[in-house]
Length: 144
Image (spheres, rainbow, N blue to C red):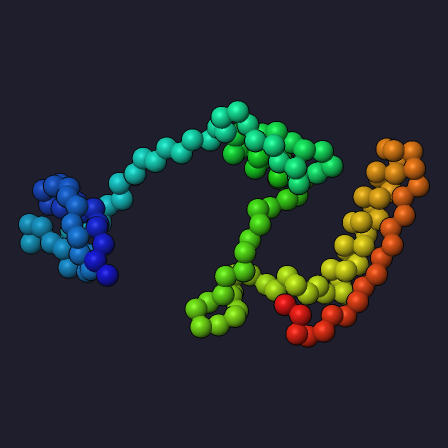
């Protein structure tokens, strides 16, 4: 694959960009040229003009005015962006993601604890008794 590389001659100090598939073969003044990395300047706007309401970050909607503010709110709440399962071509597996349609027994217990703690916390705030009904079922194998 041909790529653009930045080089510098170790003898004369000349710098240039060259398209090559073999950067080790590039020479200047009879010597192999040194690859150099030039910093590319990229500016990405962080602000969100007018803000945006996010309704699934907690009990109450949150309005954020920048990407960094959104990421900070997520970090504070232990949340992360949604990740979609994308399999390796020719397979239904990926080394980067898991099948989230099933859950381990340990995961079920943690989910139950989370729901119970949330119900007890919200019931204290609202002055009502919180009750969590927990049911787990085994689904048929052909359900996707």
